[in-house]
Length: 244
Ligand code: SF4
Ligand code: SF4
Image (cartoon, rainbow, N blue to C red; front, top):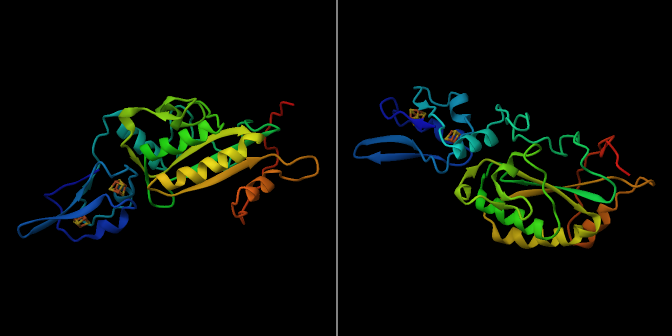
């Protein structure tokens, strides 16, 4: 995204449209115009699609590198990821409804939703969190389920490719699952790594209820000192097809 300096009159209206503060005013002599920092811009398209500029000065730039295309696809809810065929952040994740059949008995699903609401995140922080939970026993799904896997150099460790470390995106979901017994360690890892990153995230856990209708995950959450969430979601048919 860019500002056409010929058209901009420096009214500043567009500033409020950008969630991640990529637009700022630049004064040269008596002239003040808006500029977009492309390292901060996540190519979400909000300023352009919402026609933020009354002069039409905000223009799309061609996204040529795969990193620019990635941040656009992951940050603009109107696009669809080619590999997964899913719009938005390109992932059919458990929070929306599990249709993947990934969560079986004795397994806990992990969804770490980074950068939301409205803060954004850099991939180097995503790597810190992914590597911390991978070391604690979380396995990540492949690129057919989540676009993040495409940016991983090593899907076993969660290491992100060096060339995308400084990529800024609106939000990204780290998805994976671990054995039930590994969950306490994963929760500890989340608590530790939270102190080392400069963004926000929410942690979602996915678990099947047992025959008595109990979710063992709730005791484990409390045992690790997490406040029990007030919100949850019940999916009927979670974990199908069942592999017993
Ligand atoms: S495309 Fe999105 S991130 Fe980039 S300047 Fe516009 S609103 Fe901000
Ligand atoms: S809204 Fe348009 S004219 Fe006003 S500062 Fe932004 S780009 Fe310039």
